[in-house]
Every structure is written in C-alpha cells, then in structure tokens.
Length: 324
Image 1 (cartoon, one colour):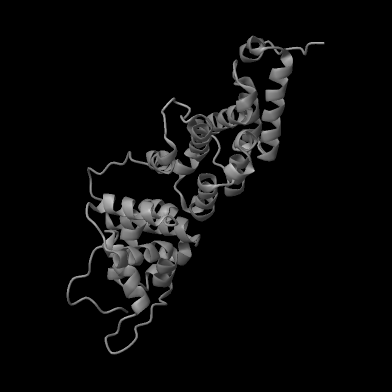
Image 2: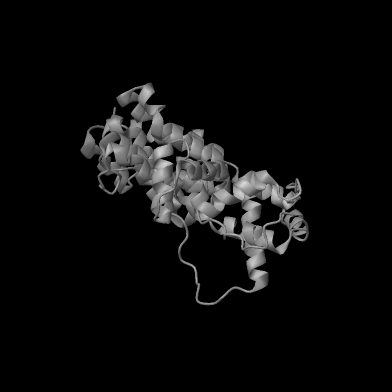
C-alpha cells in the first residue's frame, strides 16, 4: 500500500524518483539526523527547523547521496538568517552524519583519513573561538567538503582536485569571515577597548569583568600586542589548521608575507602559532617574569619573534626591548 502524501509539492513530486519507499527512506534519514543533532524537539526553533527541513526534501536524489542530501537540507535551513548556530558537539555529530555515505562508498579508512581527521581537529581546536559568521556557515562548508570527497565538486558544481582539497577548505572558511565593516571612521579608544575585550572573551572564555580587571594591570605596549593578535586571530586559526603539514604551513605563511623564511624562522613561527592562546593568557595574568641581567623572559621573547616574523604584531623599536 502506498503511503499517503501531505499534499505539499516537494513531497508529492518525489514520486518522480520512483515509489514512496525511496521518499520514506530519505524522510526517515532526515528525522534520524535531526534526532541525533537534538534539533527536532529541543526548542521552538528546533521544531521549526525540522518542519522546514521535511518540506524542503529534494524531488530527485540518489540513494548513494542520501546522507549528503540530508546534511545539505539541514545546513541550508539552519544557515538562513543564522537561524541556528551549532554547538561544538552538534557540529561533531553533523560531520559524522554527513560523512556516513563516504564511509560506505570508500570504506572506513578513507573517511577517517587525512582531510576528515583535519576537519575534526579544526573543530576541536578552533570552533569555540570562531566568530558568529564562520560558525553559522560551518555546516555548509562541511556539506561542500563531503560533496568534493564523493564527486570531486562542491554543491555549486565547482571542481576541486584531490591535491587542492585542503586549500579549498581554507578558502571556504575565509569566505565566511565577516568583511562588511565600515572603516571610514576611526574608532574611539572606548570602541577599540570594547572590541579587544570582546575578542579576548571569545579566545579565552573569560568573563568581561575579569578581562577589564586584567587589562588594567597590563602595560600599554602589551595591550597593543594583544590588540594586534586579536585582529589577526582568524589568520592564526588558519595557520593552526595547517601546522601539522610543514609544507602547507610554509607555503601559506610565505604566500601571505610575499617572501621566503628560513627553516629556523619557520620553526619559531610554528611554535608561536601553537602557543598563541597560552601567550595571550600569560600576558593577561602577568606570568612572563623577566630573567637575567637583560630583564628578558626568553619564552616570551621567542614567541613574539615568531609573531613578528609572520607580521602578526609590530616589531619592537630599539630601546623598548625589556619585558616586564
């Protein structure tokens, strides 16, 4: 017996793809995914997402791409007007659901391999401190990545070669960073301080009141360094995602700088990227204690040298070399 349809066009027209069984399979997969993501009944917004997702199920789809079809529906609905920003845990689950079809097509070894593992690690290390725009677009980025893995092209039909997939991932992330800012008027000191506190709050997870107190004890030169790093934190995130591949990291940094770096300079740069959050926290907490007759904290000095190499903080002028 054929299942009754609701009368909505996307559902009734799904018979073009065969019988109601294929439609039911996709619908069940969608409901299952919404349950896993705890979107279906969690809130009124979640129920709206579930309702819209069901209504927007595609008229034509391949069973080989069922997981991808489901993931795209959810990503599109959640991304409209930033309807729902995924938590870190939800995004882990979303990536797992989206790559389910890749598992079946290519085997577990492929799906748990290089690029998928790097996406998992990127979410683990950087998602919490990402800005709202990037978080809102992350599910769509994942959908495009899975589409590339399966078919060699993203959901817009842009072809991506196997060796260019990681760069494509970074490009998709950079496209999601906010660019529509009015730079026509210089910001006031109060606005700059408020922006710094907001950025530090996202990076460190600290309360604004605690950050205001900490910054009141930080020297002005160090406030400038914190400001520089916060302004460049998206770039730091991008470098961090490439750090495991020395070749990719080297290529990205040198392309950004427009010049070559020596091996030792690259080592300094990579260490500074890995320890950027620790550096920020130590500045806030006044933990870089000067050592020796020159009054220099060598750990701090080396980290700052790495940031200077990458153009992330301004170089110190002569006469201002001493650390607190």
